[in-house]
Amino acid sequence: MSERVVIVGYGMAGSRLAAELHARDGDRKVTVLGAEPHRAYNRIMLSTLLAGKIAEPDVELAEVAGQGVDVRTGVAVTAIDRANRVVRTDDGDGHRYDHLVLATGSRALVPPLPGLDPLPERVVPFRTLDDCRRILAAAQGARSALVLGGGLLGLEAARGLAARGLAVTVVHATGWLMERQLDPAAGAVLAGTLEGLGVRTVLAVPATGVAADGGGVRLDLADGRSLTADLLVLSCGVRPDTTLAAAAGLAVERGVVVDDRMRTSDRRISAIGDCVQHDGTLTGLVAPAWAQARVLAQVLTGDDPLARYRPRPVVTRLKAAGIDLAAMGDAVDGPAPDGPPVEELTFADPARGTYARLRIRDERLTGAILLGDNPAVGTVVQLFDRGAPVPADRRSLLLGRAFGTVPAAPAASPALMPDAATVCQCNDVSKGALVACWRSGARTVDALSGATRAGTGCGGCRDALAGIVDWLAGAEPAEATR
Image 1 (cartoon, helix red, strand yellow):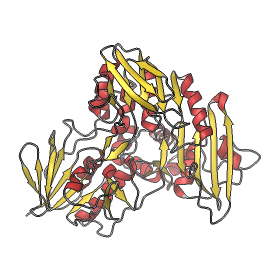
Image 2 (cartoon, rainbow, N blue to C red):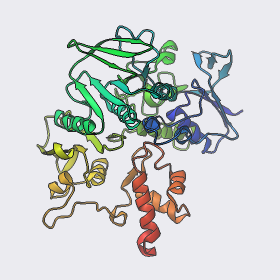
Image 3 (cartoon, one colour):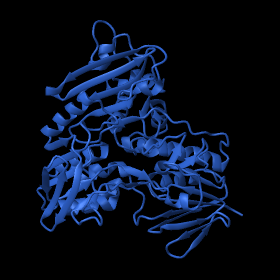
Image 4 (cartoon, rainbow, N blue to C red):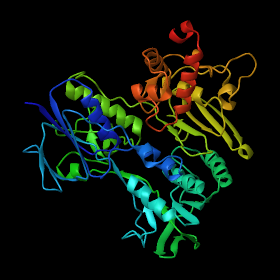
């Protein structure tokens, strides 16, 4: 009898796991239950959709289809019967499982402000495709918008609405933007860059209430001011969706607790993605979710029963037109006090919207913030990701150019990039893997992307993919195959 694997959630984690299982040999039946009525989509690209740079079909992920895979959308799971190994759905069905996987993701936080329960028509969280549709509908004919929350997603939403011609104001309770990834100096430079792009910021003041009617929205602030607009977008963070897991009696803290093999406290149930807590940490990013899906597929299919999830260093990129930002490591929190001394370098040019900060310890990058046009950003990300020694000429990393006779480490030319260099952070695709696929006949960016999945996450590596394709197409045979 086929092994029955049921996946609850058809988002970026659940759809990736279904694809990983489908691609592996074995006798199993995979059922995917998605509460949203749509096929799986790339949540990271919703801000680009909001900006009008792409259309809805462009955010759809490749559909998992074929023998042994049953995808059901618009079906919400209401309960887990662990004793009988059955999940119940809101359409009255029951689905038996030999192994259950929770990929329930996370939900947008709605702050407990007066006027937000229930949500008025002109107030929309920014998390799902339906949210994006509601924002776009409200933006038609609108002239202004407020965004509550100056984190990564809030700024992407703000930039997207500004690109549609709306006057946008971001309200953030903390004294600087993206405080989890940036220091105050970088936050100030970013605020200046946003101002030049039509996004005003109001910082260090909490919101106290919301009033909305057919004419618009009013946001009241703690300092006595009130801001008005045609639309209010909520981007106040997310919370892992642990409702099913908790009701089933699984171990839940901030997220569903899992081990290195993505197992919950019930060995018949695993969990991946935004809903999980691994080693005390929540992720909320696509690269860890896809890595977890790969590990779980290896374990469930027996391809590698000893596979273990090991978190990799995270690089945060802001995906908004006109803003180049990469942040990684301990640039904000700082390193532990014990061990070798820390070398810190900073450079700021607010007039040009440029800021750079590097932390180096024992000749390795432990953290970095790069804002604005810096040609060294690819090199810095590679050095951080691989834990490689930094060049003697630190200024080449800080300012993006070499001084004296010392080169700036991994060169801009793909020919000089090591094969082990990671080109796509989301899918952990190396330059060597891309070259191998090119040799096998994938001679375009789309072909390489289809073969390796590079560029299907945040999309930030598409330019690098194009550069590698151009280099390979024009390279000497010996150079391209070495």
